[in-house]
Length: 294
Length: 216
Image (tube, rainbow over all chains, first blue to last red; front, side, top):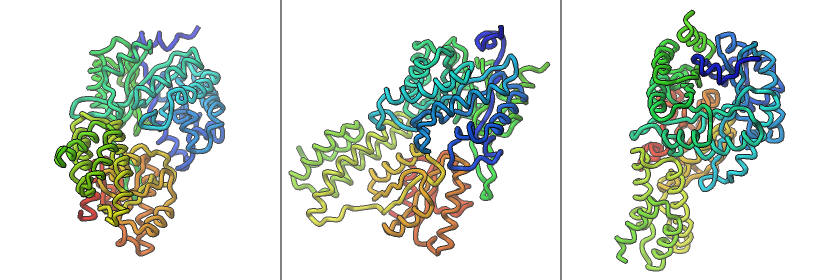
């Protein structure tokens, strides 16, 4: 029997993948369309991107389903395709998954707010996430990753929805900003509040992704390690993007400057590391060299 | 209750996010025949400003910003018809057309800027998300806007900000409207390089930048 992702986490640092959106754009993905639609319309490109991460050394990659919840997809008029495109996301990724590696089903935020700031009830969020999770589950993802969550309440809706639809392990990563008073989500959830709540709900691995660069993420991982014994996931951005007036995108943290924090991030307590916005297979390849020097 | 007491209660109601209190104080102000523009400027707006400071200090977060914007809106909905009845112009800091550029469905940041600008006394026309560039120009012309605010969350859709400014130049409208840009990947360098008049890192700095651009 293949080892589970849990067994791998216990054994060594698990390497995840890096940015997906920027890779899509490299392959000619047009702005203003729904990224998940390419799971059906252009699966070869999606597979190529996953393959490039597996080849770079990722133990697990994440499906192209970040915005695959019905609520998010309704912005493109594709709300009826949520199940189908999530199913496709997991299926096509599985086609290129090497033996012994893993596939995580990505579940990102809805982009909308719950009441009272927004229009939505928790049950609506939950249903929307459940449908997405069902697709990822049926497409045979190995685990689900609820990621880039800026509202703990929404993350908990996603958790309930995912668990309703699937018995796969569900991990959660929150997105924190650095404020004068420390790290908080956009909605004001503190690191300790998030970890306490998620741990209380029995989430088997928690962490953070996006917004912070690898230096800030390293610091945050240290703080998280002081608050939980759970496996910690850390996926930092490559700093901040800038765009030349010709449209060329650059991230403020170059590859070497990004990866030099990885050993300390792991020392501080990260068990699953990978990249987020601005990172690509080159970053992952370099991290693989650092954490698996043989 | 003295006028000063009322004004400070208005500020406090905004800071506490107490919508009902905001509305009831606005009604009291009308009953008492207070100068309603003074009520707005010295009562509610100082509350909005304080909320902004608390946000900058990391004490308040997005929910509090949204709530205070809604409180202000609720108070204005009571005050505006009265001002209109009395043929008193509501003092406006300027007319703003705002939206997220085409191809980009992200509207959290844009909504916040829209709400905070409005709470601070700008007349805001919010075109929503994924707005065609032509629509920005048409709305700005129709509404005789002073300022066009363009939001973009993606590095790809940021190009829309550049294109809009090019369109304004082509149509000789560049001097007629000020353009301010924002969004997570947007920075001052980008704003400068595309010829935007202003840039705001967040909803609070957007207020100062807009005031500066419109010399208010």
